[in-house]
Image 1 (cartoon, rainbow, N blue to C red):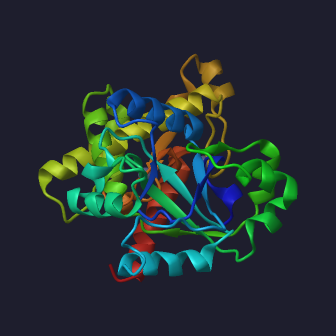
Image 2: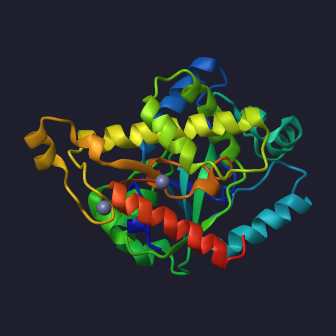
Length: 318
Ligand SMILES: [Zn+2]
Ligand SMILES: [Zn+2]
């Protein structure tokens, strides 16, 4: 797939010298809660509901004294050399109330600060966002070559403690880059934070029933977790339907059936002629699913789709 096939656009870029694999971190100006909250809300506003493209800088930072021969430092240096100057990944971040120490654990946090804290201020990257969805960019060219000198200089010539928002012209330049999904170990943070949100939200009971049917085959979790996974999926499905309604886009995703005229003729709501369908039910509870995992289908297409799913299971011997 390509970057332009992602369900949302790339909102901003992060320049890093260490590749982020499970989280992206930012350093607030001070260690107090106010500075941390300010930093967090700035970054959150910058990525919004979009993706973040990660760029690896040409230079690598020097660790604190005593770490020049550290095994982790040498490994990081090696990893950097292979990626320097390249656009390496596209990530979906999620805001969480957990700070970096909670996300990575106190021991790893201490090591990180020992090695990289600046001027003895032990809050380097303390505003952290877990990566809940990630794609590797399959392109060995340097960012300068992909973006051209002008966009490259605008985005990366100056250092920045926050993200660098992209303009449409820059989004065009990266639209055709090939990407492939990679496993994101922190998907659970996004999933579990949303359990609570889903719990306290109003969800249309029809949507909840429809999603529960689509998720009937989910196995391997206890009843309590299964209930929470289903509830969260229904919460996303509900949001998916509302987004489609707001966009005035209530048609079948498969055959383009448009119930609007018929509905107004009969004096009913068009929504009743379309079903919400979960495209990847077995990913629930495993991967960080979003509104892009759902479809609106007319009842016939929905039925066909489920026959198709059943048949493919049979042919795979499952
Ligand atoms: Zn249809
Ligand atoms: Zn379905």
